[in-house]
Image 1 (cartoon, rainbow, N blue to C red):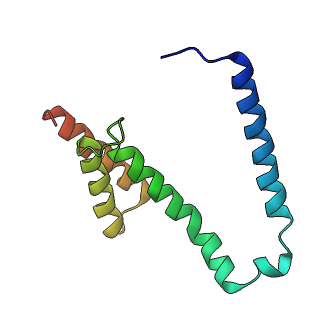
Image 2 (cartoon, rainbow, N blue to C red):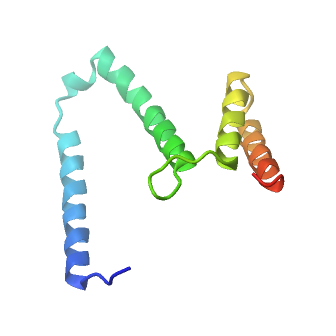
Length: 109
């Protein structure tokens, strides 16, 4: 791993901060009437769930080099999905995912 120039790091931090501010400003500049449409309200309610699901899937099956990996994490995620489909309470869903993941790892998977 090569060392990065401190000036380049601070430039990246500054550009990221300005970009985040501009995204926030863009969100505040949207007219209120556009946000009250039923389709926009429905999408705004579903978007965080979709993003969280996508991030979870990517982090679960990522092998580190960009290739998908099927290991204990995937088994835990599948068990959690089954618990959600059975309408289990949230803490039970998490507990099932942890137990299955730990069990698969204990078995050498």
